[in-house]
Length: 99
Image (cartoon, rainbow, N blue to C red; front, side, top):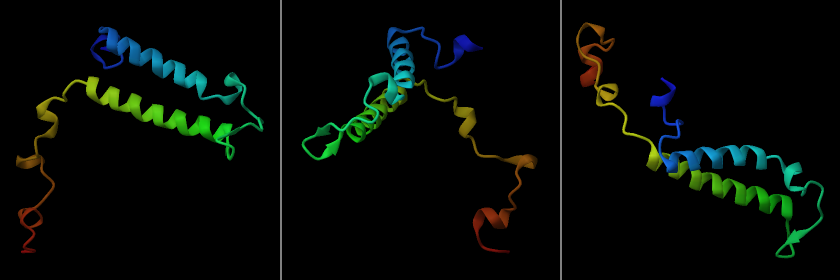
């Protein structure tokens, strides 16, 4: 089951994404980088901790996009609408005519 999941690094790209995620978990702690309680300013007005958090979040968006592109297509039977006796909607709810 684990080998069939997205997280199993069966391709080099997936292994790289997994390593980047693990590195981000570690780098999310500002103490590791050593910028906690720093008074250094970026561009003369932006505290370095805030700049680090902004860049970290932007990089996270890039990683999420890479994960989206690498994820396999979901099975088509997951998105089939419910029909038959299992359906909880009445015909009036489906058509919206209120009868």
